[in-house]
Image (cartoon, rainbow, N blue to C red):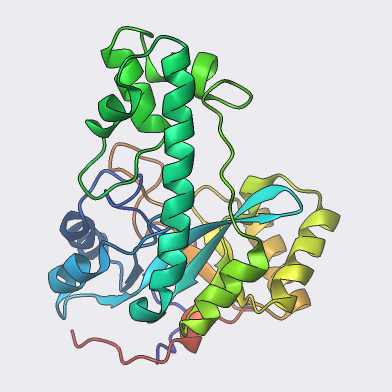
Length: 285
């Protein structure tokens, strides 16, 4: 078990298996370089990275399984991180999420082709790594390459952003389904980056009530960019709803100097770190 509450844990980051730019071995090497002691790679709706990351980690860093699932609560897309699960027991959920993503990708391609974009799906795939699902960022790169827009930002602003032709909603499962999937696999469900949902305090409280009721165990208290006041507020929510606290950078790329592996505020002393629930032995150093 991991018992040290001051552990430099990064339990939210991404590789080329979703929307990150580093391969799993590269991310592990960078995490070691940055002093991370406990790592979970949480790619969107898959853990294709895990075996390669485990081999790269060896006994140089402690690694647990991770994933970031999309779910829906009261019509709002919510992200739930699953930690320290048995991959074999989560395969069914991953396949369901993959099918939802592929359906969405096909709809985006069809809508873009109606706007005169030729071979939209095949073109977007050229900009996705072999192990990554095709998403709007890949379509944006293709639209720029084909001369439809001068920048990816313009592509999002005019065709891919909220309310535009390429803004296709995915049929994600509800939070109860996703939390159940994670807990059945022996893992721990954590509400990711609660600040992103821009909810009132009252609505966030309702979400946490439902999340806790269906088996959710933690929330991300310390994420890149949060100020001390917000961290203290999220810590108070942990106490109020009897949830554990998680910590993660949400790292995607070395080009974003504001988000770095392991460079996250320490958890407040008032909370219980989620990693204290992990029933695994730490690696030797």
